[in-house]
Length: 136
Image 1: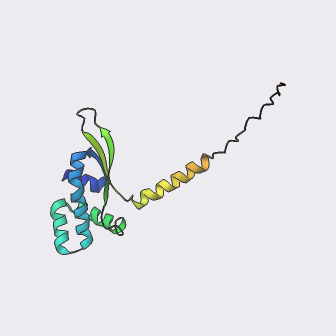
Image 2 (image 1 turned 30 degrees about the vertical axis):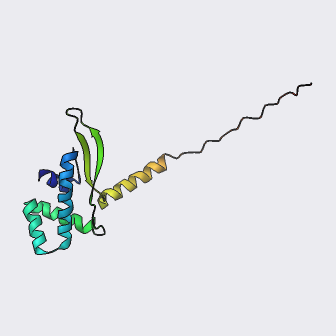
């Protein structure tokens, strides 16, 4: 449950593949329950998350980020093996980025594009060499 709460709080967690595969269906079912908006569904969400701050954060996320998505709320990005024990590490994150972060990254990318103007290089083809005709 700690991983579940961390994912809701931070939006992404770095963990082992086995733990991520165990948490991923739980997150998807919680978000689906919140989207149902029934009292029994909300009661089950509250029983899993326990603290009201996590429930409220999940409600806000569903209202803004996952309103048009019916399933597949998380993704796993494979990071390779950990050096210590060789366990496969993954980055488990929500599919849609937060609207504030999306706006910040688009502003940053515009400034980078404006500063780094790339000019096309001219391609100069070599001149054909003059060959002498050999007399026979």
